[in-house]
Image 1 (cartoon, rainbow, N blue to C red):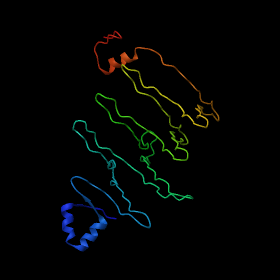
Image 2 (image 1 turned 30 degrees about the vertical axis):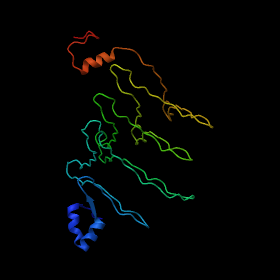
Image 3 (image 1 turned 90 degrees about the horizontal axis):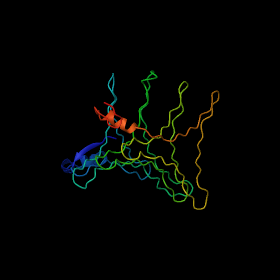
Image 4 (image 1 turned 90 degrees about the vertical axis):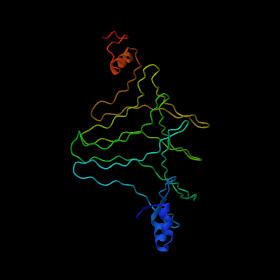
Length: 246
């Protein structure tokens, strides 16, 4: 389906022609300076119209074209920048035997088809909250969906299986460095249960088919002048009083 963008003034001109108006009602998206919308048609007996946003293919040694979606900036007092919201469709049928499922949201990075083991990797996915000048930076929440009568959804964080000659990816959970306050803590806990058992916490290391099984190592933190050394290195001080470095 072809999608055309038509301003409100151009729409008035199309109204004078019944044929042009009919074409516009089936193919156009109306927009104004205040509100923009990109909508497809509904269906009473089948699938509604789809929307696909894709950049063009590049050739030669050029990188692929980018797609960027940005919300608006707010520069006024007590104002907040715009929100980017992505909703999957509801499964709104309440049939008792096989009602509708909610649609999924998939973020999949591009694959790397090159033959160089060290250069031709798959694309990364970065999720990062916004920074702040004086207050705290933004939080990152990853939460499964609730249920009215059934189980809530699972949250799985896992690296994928390796190829024939490689190792599986590392799972790294760490908090950031802190200069003056305490560094962030890692809190792993299970939920309470009203009438059932509380959830378990299971720590298990991998088996080794031909080699040794993995180790389980717990190390408490030590005290040192690392923070002062960090400050001296990254502020490029010529004199560091806490380490007596000149």
